[in-house]
Amino acid sequence: MPLKDCGIIELPKVTDPRGNLTFVEGGNHIPFDIRRVYYLYDVPGGADRGEHAHKALHQFVICMSGSFDLLLDDGFDKKQFHLNRSYYGVYVCPMMWRYLDNFSSGAVCMVLASEPYSEADYIRDRGEFLRAVGAA
Image (cartoon, rainbow, N blue to C red; front, top):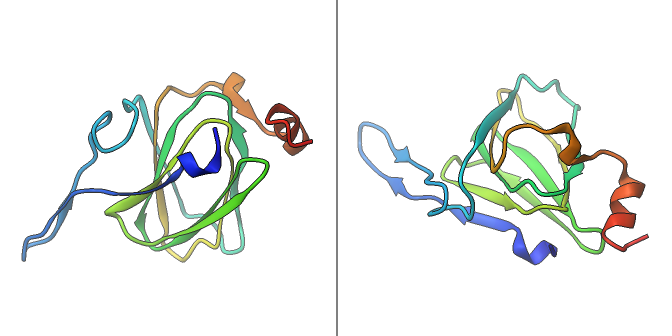
């Protein structure tokens, strides 16, 4: 899938003087049903995460607290997103190399995924990824 299929999705925001509420419905706000949720936190300063692609997994990445950068690369084009609000996130389609860095202190990254964890779905070698998308 090309990079243009990935991007920011703004989520509903119910404002209230007592605090705001945002929600995500799989198949409604994001283009897949949610089968797994995980989150990254306590990422040490200067550390990065990601550096892999998924063969079939769809993901939606949300910054729940703090901020971080998400770089997406389809083998031909790259796009960087600075995430720092909990009412929007980035849809990441399959066969997209991803790299997360620039985590602020206290940052929490939540990821909604279309499938349970499967090591077989990962491409962890950049050269293998580039060959798979026809960019090498």
